[in-house]
Amino acid sequence: MGAIILAALLLGMGIYIIIYSFRSEIFGADQTHLPGNIFAEGQPRAEPEGIYVNRSQRSFLPLTRQFKPWERRIPLPLEGMKKKLVKAGSPMGAMEFLAFKVLSLAGAPILGLTFLGAQLPKETILISSLLIGFFLPELWLRNKIKARQLRIRRDLPSIIDLLNLCVGGGLDFMLAVNRVVRDLKPCDLTRELAEVYRETQIGKTRREALKNFASRVDLPEAHSFVRTLVQADRMGTPLAEALSMQAEEMRTRRFQNGESMALKAPIKLLFPLFAFILPVVLIIVAAPILLEFLRGGINFGL
Image (cartoon, rainbow, N blue to C red; front, side, top):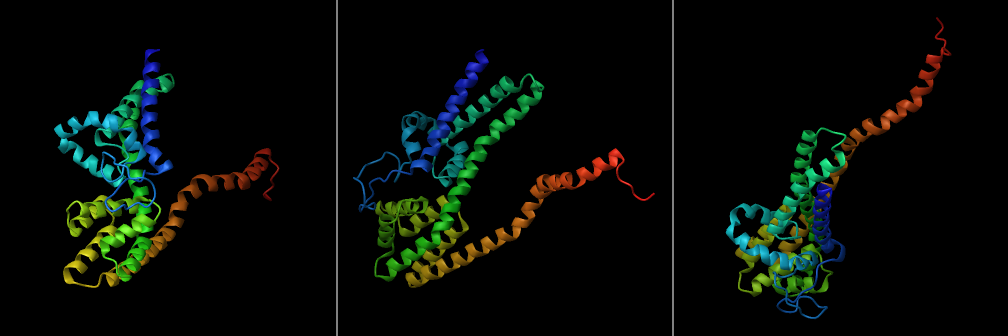
């Protein structure tokens, strides 16, 4: 009875963390105050963490404040985890994700022993559930990173075109960033560009802000975009021309990626074809012949 209650508590805490981590995807991120009124709508509001805070982060702020001293004491083991969380859009803090992993490790064996203890050996359930509990948060985080990078890769050529139009109209690059972020609907890429604008407003150079942007996004397209801007700034190349060439290159790369995925589709369809469709076809075609043969109704002319 006690194991069932403990399993229910751990399951409820895990569901609480997962629901609040997904709220940012369901409802979107809050628009907060930036230097220069970068968001057109809404009243300026100051948030305690960075340029924008997801609803999931805001709901975790009391818990995050309790974990901050521990993050400072053990910074090195959490550095890799922090980088992954930044790539995923910071759905939660590093210590919160670590607590999520602990809950997953503790809850999976209890749930497995509670619901499958009578059907399977306990050693098998314990080992399997520990593996599942350890890798499940990592898989969830990896999927969030891939989904966010896919959204940024999809929006980047269009954003570069808009920046090219603004720069071609006579605006400075950072003013063009301000205009694009202010007028477009908030998304992952516009929030990252807003962070670039904020960093330049607090004293960082444009080169440093762009390199930080490429590091946070960690996409080949983003690194190429930043490299082009840095080289254009260093060599004195017209920025509008560089942006136009970069947008065209990214469209070509996206088209090539689409062709590559289309060519891989038949290979990926082989397994479900052989595993699910082919057995059904064989049953439909061969079952009547086999039944007639077993009844002795088929005469082969012998």
